[in-house]
Image (cartoon, rainbow, N blue to C red; front, side):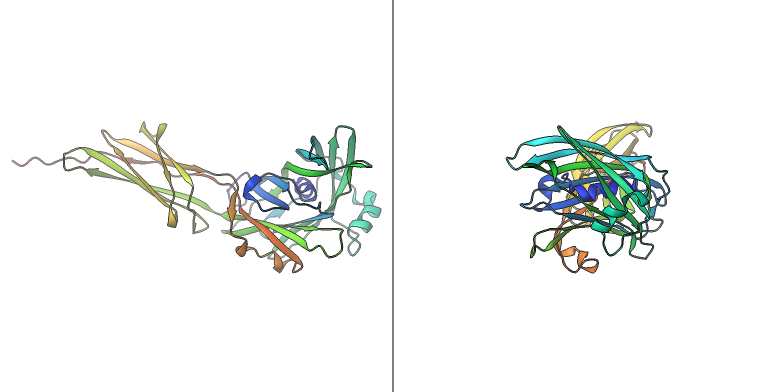
Length: 340
């Protein structure tokens, strides 16, 4: 998994699309929310800037476990994306990420990381397009501190043939068997920093916040109209590590049995992360709420990349995708007492 992450950083892929600011950025999407559980990481990159970055650094937040003991030659991930020519024409790109012997890349390490030529691991990223192929090393180091778990760095050479260079425009990288989720609640920041070969061009940065845990609560309160009809108000709240999540479509499910659900309605979480719907209630009914999102844009003012790289200007902040469901609850119509 680590290698895949490294590849993603180096490639500056595009996945968040219009939600992200101009220039290179990376959005991280872990596949599980379970504390201390092994997790695959999906890295989506985009680069819609005017100048391709020369170096890519990915900082894995403290709290994550990082495994670097894969045997040399083992495949730890893959990449699918698009490379773009100066004319705007795009070409499919794909490849594998494999573990390699760091001793075999001493010369490349000296060039890419001159102040730190010895590394804990090297991942080789295959960048294959029609008529062009490159094997690019990514250098990986543990950083067992309270704020960082690992640092990945990649220096990306020009792709394609001389005079017909290509630049990576977008890609998706999936890393398996590298990361383990944190064991405690928190806001975990994955930070990418992009450097440029042109003198005077400032480094840029992007961040993805993974907030754990994610919680979706739900209640069902029977109500009765003045005309004697039975209804139910299904309400709840969506939050990440205690932060309310607004603007998310929540699916409300209902069924006569707790094991069989059908969609009842959609609701949107508002300020405070709350949502509610009212529906007829004719019999005892079970309810559940579910919410799924893609990458969500956040305010750049919340970036903290300067704490890692004071020379970098943060251009985008995103929240990781979420997929969460509530517990199942039941409600029955209110009985009306008939006076004797």
